[in-house]
View 1 (cartoon, rainbow, N blue to C red):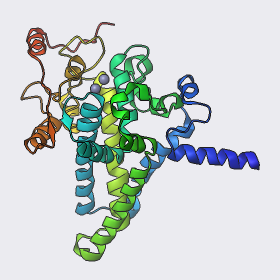
View 2 (cartoon, helix red, strand yellow):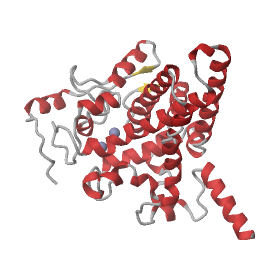
View 3 (tube, rainbow, N blue to C red):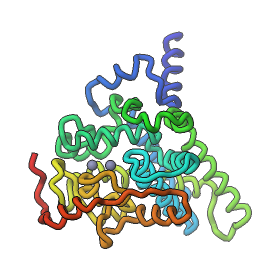
View 4 (spheres, helix red, strand yellow):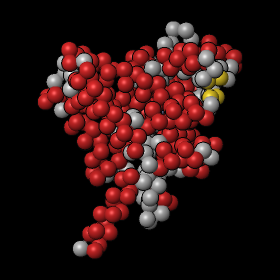
Length: 323
Ligand SMILES: [Zn+2]
Ligand SMILES: [Zn+2]
């Protein structure tokens, strides 16, 4: 009985404290890679929650809110988790960096430090043996979501993000990465209550706002983001010979507010824009430009001439990269 209580305590603490590894983070990191059923539970809950629409129905208010929350949070993930925290392609204030880390946190893709550490690792080892989500090496399903269930990928490698780890507020969000999603879910319930009470003509309810805003929006957002690991290394055009399988895709770029120009990005990851030309639609970049007009972000890094020269000489090709 005592050991049962102790185990339950460990599991409970691990759920809320992402830095808690009684056996040591290094031990966990050295485990073999495998698909772990226990770690599928959060994803299962997220997906099963979408079935709630069968009970709560739909209204334009709920659907528009879900799309709005998808867009805002996709921007937080692409512009901040990816282009700012992972690649430092522009600068911003400490307050803005915290706010967008909070918004990104509602996407249930863990904290910004974990996300950036994993992503920097991906760029160092793209589609080579050490890459933790390469469709060419480990198959599409593993690259898409399987790798997230493997406990060896769970601890945050703080040594990969020393520039971010020096902010205690970011470390806190990263360590207790469920606090924000729980508060987000409760806020949606509260919003649903207020809408039902004060705007009954909208025909919505707390449960409906919660199911659409939390479950549906977040699940689609998760897959939209994960497509960059799986689809953007499988389907699309290659402009640059980058030594990996990264691709450019307009469809993925539209879905992810600009991340679909992934071959461009693997060629030059230090640029705030991933669509290198005006016809390569990159909504996150346009929004960053807009924010820069108000001084919320600044110092957006551009694509250097040498990369444009290389692009002009490159032949567009669907061929796979040479290993
Ligand atoms: Zn990639
Ligand atoms: Zn990147």
